[in-house]
Image (cartoon, rainbow, N blue to C red; front, top):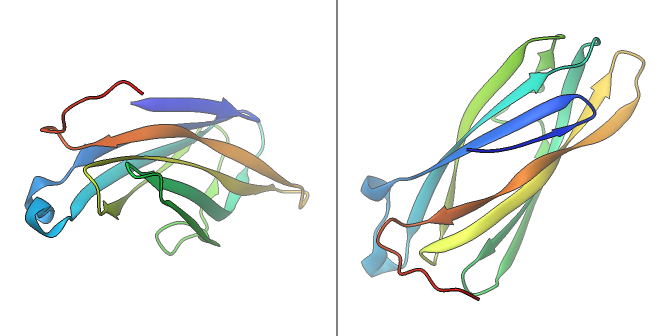
Length: 130
């Protein structure tokens, strides 16, 4: 698990390689990632948008921006969590994802919350030190 806390919002990520959805002979590797967002503050917050930077093993960068997550813009009350699972296909057997959420508090103040960088590695991938 990878986690970080920004502005009293904890983001924890657990990636999982999906062998049954992957086809290395077709240069297709797929991962699911489960995210839990916990509001450690004393005010409700709403997740308004997401931004992802996805880099594959060849250094190719893909950026993804959009409203909410999995079709929702959840309000997370103090002490509560919101979780979801999504996926990421790559044309290489490893990569890295990092990003941020834009949150809004009850006064309309918007702020960025970091999503920690996490590694996407196929289990049979030979490890190399860069």
